[in-house]
Length: 392
Image 1: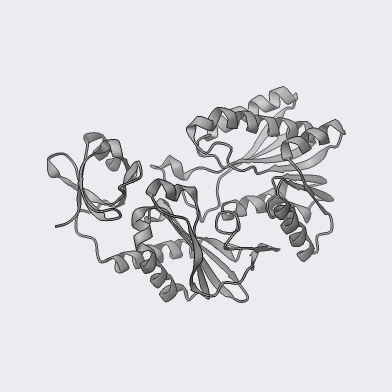
Image 2: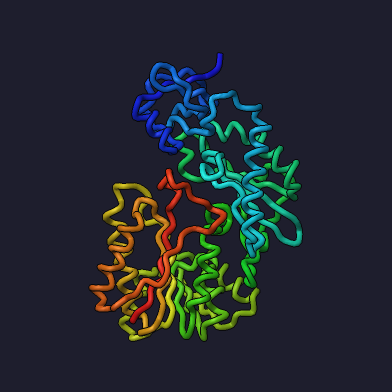
């Protein structure tokens, strides 16, 4: 018997409007095993499409098709999804050797991430399967990637905490071939080294790649990069700046950024270990000023309960940065917290500017890189806000 799920009127309307997530409260009945692909039905048993089923998560159903005809076999279906995702990335003319190949729901593969890294030694994929269903698909995903991508190696990076909500264990390993300890990645003219097993996310913050490049356009004079991680903003800015001060609280990040600056023959980058909040305060007290500042903090609001505290944090670092910014200078400031939406983030920046007694103009609004596409019906896919401000 085909696994089935019956959804409420509200669930049916959510599907009709294009959102792929159906929460437990809108699932009236289900006959399926964890990770099954189920036929979704609405009132009076009307078929609505196909979805994956989770027995543990509050996101009980994730739509994968709104067609009522049966799906092809799993391998054929996955091949089609991967081919479409690869065609999109090919059309973007990405000036880098690393990009996101599969971005979950935005590519019709819910709870699935595939990032592609390449260097002189070959191509490597990093895969994350973040639901019961995609975790069951993992062997087939690897087979398809090997057949079509011909990688030298594939890393399974199933360490995000979200897997706990699906009742899944953490799992980091090489799933195919051989993967070196560090892989070189080029973004434009800058080359980084990253660890695909232990680096942030799948190795790099690929969603910031185009914002790194954009920041260089606005850079001049003395520059500051807060929360530098591996120097993503700092190294792009360094080619246009007279000097760059890069700050991070992690000793490993400081060492990596220092090594990356040396690798790129950038001798005007000073990397400092320290708490960015404290360092911004100390820089202000010492009357140091900058012409360009980039702020790319970690997600301050990982859930709705932490939004108020996150807003306080965002206001604090941006207020300090605005005070440190010389007239005519640019502030490139980011938030990767989905729970702080664009309107809230802009309001924070406005409040920070008022308290800093700084007149700030909004030059540009940016989001995650184009290989991390968004869906109009899924606001959760718009999580990264990057605002370029200019002090008048």
